[in-house]
Length: 443
Ligand SMILES: *Cc1c(COP(=O)(O)O)cnc(C)c1O
Image 1 (cartoon, rainbow, N blue to C red):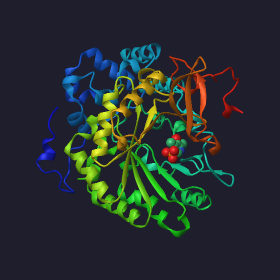
Image 2: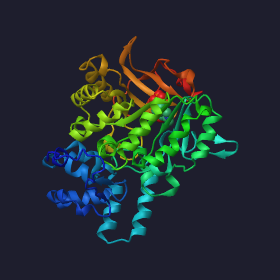
Image 3: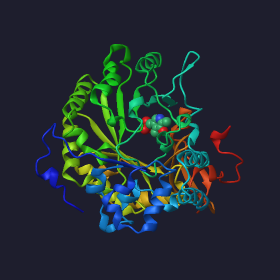
Image 4: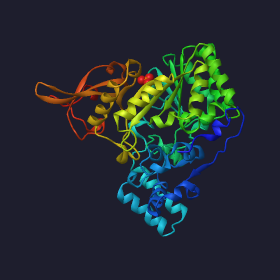
C-alpha cells in the first residue's frame, strides 16, 4: 500500500484542497488500479454495480485498498461489488443485458425488479416506525424505540463511498419510492418538542457528515433551545472517518464543524459520533488519527460499531485488534451487529453461532475497556436481539438470547431461548426452545 505521502507532506493544513475524485457504475472503467484485474473480474464488478449501489472516492482507492492483495483485500470487498453478491440468476440477467448493449432504461427496470427481491426495507423500516404529527407523517424519521428518534436529513442521504454490505443500500439506488428523507428542519423540531420522552436524536443517512457544516448547524443548533432541553444526546452516524477523514482535518469547513461540535458539548449535550469501522485497516493512517484527535478535542465521544461480515472481518483477531486500537485512540466500542437480512446478505451472512464464537473469542482477548461492545446483535422488527450464547439446558441445546432494545421497553433484558440451529443466520429462522409455540414477544 502506498504511504500517505500527501498527508506526510503537510496536508494537515486546514483549507488545503485534497484531490477528490468519485467513481460510480458509470465511470468505474477509469479507475487505474482496476486494470490489474482480469477482464472477467472487471465485468463482474460492472454487472453487480448496475444493481447494488457503487461509489468510491480516490482516497479509498489510493490509500485504503491494498491492491497487491485484491480481490482478498477487506477494503476492496467493502466497497467493490463482487460477483457472488448477486444470486446467479440475477447476475446472468444483468450480464446478458450489458453484453447485448441494452439501453439504460431497460437496465434500470431490470435492476429495480431485482431490488424488490432483495428485501429493501428490512425490519419494517418504511411502515412501522414512521412518526406522525397529527395526521401527517414525518417522513425522513423513524421512531422505533421510545427514547431515540432517528433522523435522515435530506442532504445527508449519500456517502463518500458506499459499503457493499450496507442495509440502507436502497437509499442510494435512485429509486425515489425506496428512499427515506426529509428536508423539514421545522417539523423535526416540532415533533421533538411534543415528544419529551425522546432523550436521543440519532442523525443518520447516508452519512450526515457529507453535509456542509452550515447545513448541519441548521439541524443541530436549534437543539440547544430550552424547549428541547429534554434532548440530551445527539448521535451522528458516520463512515467519514474511514472514507473521508479530511472532513475533520483539511476540508474548508473542517474547523467550522469542529466548532459546532464544541458549541453543542459546551451547551451541555452529549454528542457522540457513531463511527463505522469494519476492519483495523481503516484506522491505521495518520489522517484518521489526526481526525480522531481533533474530534476528541471538542469533547465529542466517538463510539464504534460494525456488522460481522463473511469475507471481510469473520475473524476474532481482526475484531480484538480493532477494538484494542480503538481503545488506544480514545474511541469506545459499542456494537457488533449481525449482517441484516437485506441486499447482498448472501455474500456476507454467517451462521449466528459463528458470530457468537467470533464475538466471544475477540472479547476474551481484550481488557475490560474493550469489552464495551455488545453483540452479536440482530436489528430485527421487534428490536435489537443479542445472541448471548449456545448452551445446554436439561439435555436440550439452545441459543440464549435477550433484547438489548425493543419496541416494547418491557421486553428489554428478559432472557429467552431458541432451539439451537447451526445454520440459522437471522431471528426469523429461529424457533422457540422447550416445545413452546411462540416467543414471548410474539403475542
Ligand atoms: C439501534 C437503533 C437505535 C439506537 O438504540 P440504542 O440501544 O440506544 O443504541 C435507535 N433506533 C433504531 C431504529 C435502531 O435500530
